[in-house]
Amino acid sequence: MIRMPHRSVTRFFIPLIDVLLLLFSIFLLMPVVSEEESAEGETPASMSREDMADTVESLKRELKDKADELQKYEAMQQPLQEIEKMRAELERLRKEKEQALKRSTFVRVLDIDGDGRLSFFDAASLDNPVMPIHDEKMARALIERHKMEAGEHTLYYHFLMPRKATGFPTQQQELDYKGWFARVANSLKERLP
Image (cartoon, rainbow, N blue to C red; front, side, top):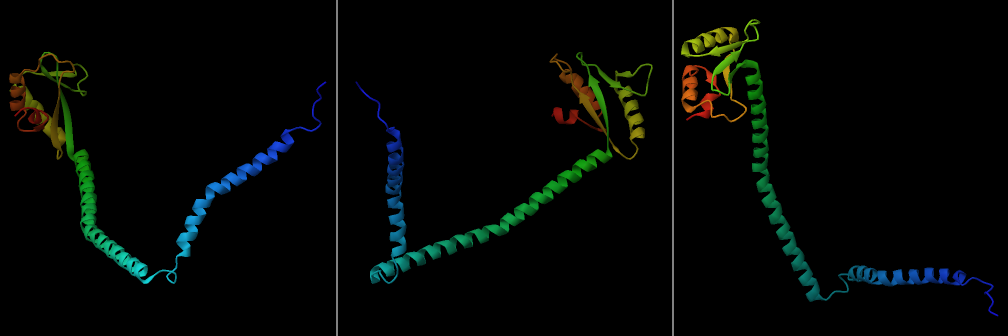
């Protein structure tokens, strides 16, 4: 009849495995430790004259290379500082321009519908807020009215094109509208040559 052992076998193997892992890790770390010792162990007293002369020459070359590199970076520092100043100045000017446009521009939106007809939405007129602009005479009257409302501000007309591509306004209609509003700043000046 087979009997079970009185002691567990794992009680013996677990400490043995720990010891083996410890020995294996020491084995893996030996080359790293030996390289550090060999690098530290080489002192000027243990070097030959030729090795020492080579080491001194290589250190001089490395020092000269680093000095040249430093001079390059110092020479580049001045233009970089000027570029940073220019960027800061450009950003300041952009903000100034944006603020000036916000302060001094009196914008009015003119709508071009899907048939190419021009109109202005006048919120002040409660009876008929959509004011169609059929000809140059109506356009000039609207410009004069808006110039009086704008006062010292710059009058700017933004033409709102149809949302869907309908083929309108035609090129001739755009040229007409551009001619009618040629005396004031508008968005059509940027569209046509």
